[in-house]
Image (cartoon, rainbow, N blue to C red; front, side, top):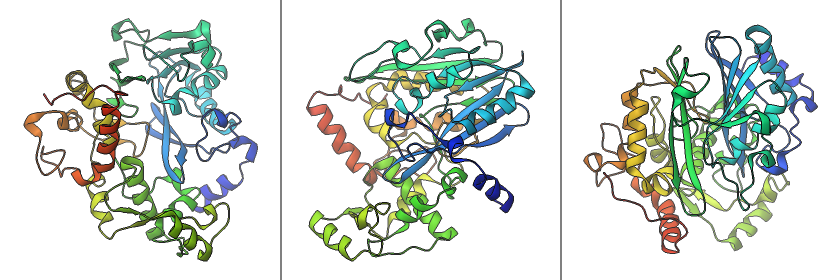
Length: 409
């Protein structure tokens, strides 16, 4: 970020970043959310990045805005409608026309669902379209109770040709997949004009360098760059990169193989000697240490714009419905897109339909390998990093909380 951009960020009034409804989804940075808008395709597609996380494990969450050929805008997966965010959207409205359609492309991602109603209220002429079979926990409430305007909200038709924006967009609905306590579904949108694919959670790519939105406040990066509770980490590009790469391992594996947990007795003793015992520094508590081989685990995730399916989806969700997932991936891969914009992590990703399809090869016997999850020409994700997720999978299955996983196809 250059000096001019930094000065612009500092000049923003705190109330412009305020998100008062953060208790509905209490994720870091809670009630203060900055927004970065970027133009992906000139005069056609823009992304709006904000930040979310738990315990300083912070990643981008992204909304995509597409200009309609008929005039106006389509919003895919809204983010928090802060004053700053709405101002940035209205700058596009002034040039390209009003917000006509707002899309909620998931049924299980609360971090996406919570913003749709408040966002739609800021654009009262818009129509809201949601993925089918929406649900809420612990009580299954109607959409209007969840904030979606009753008279302006509809379910996306199963046949995409029936949607009012069918001339410009095709879409494919995965699911709903039954998971016991809930369901999973995602809707991928394909903008035919710009050859851009919009996805929510199903495929991602991890950049080696921390994204711009994460670097606006580097504290989480520096916190995770520490090797122990006793470290005082200098703010420099190398440590920001180190923190980001470790954050990525936390985000995908929860407890990767290179992470060693520390007994709480030792944790408290270490905290008494920690240089930073402030509330922001969790009072010096640092309950883990990284082994030297952590970089190997990250290198299998990042680099070269590699597409992959998040390990938690591989281990706990999509393996419950391999055939339905592959059929959906085949449909999406039949579209001639040249870039992908996910709702998280890196964006845009220059990728072909073939690369997209390869990301789902972990569900197929012909691509399986004893050395790892994938063997389709790209370096497999390390099987040892899946250990903690596989333990969760076994416990949930054994207790009958989720249906058993199915064999590869």
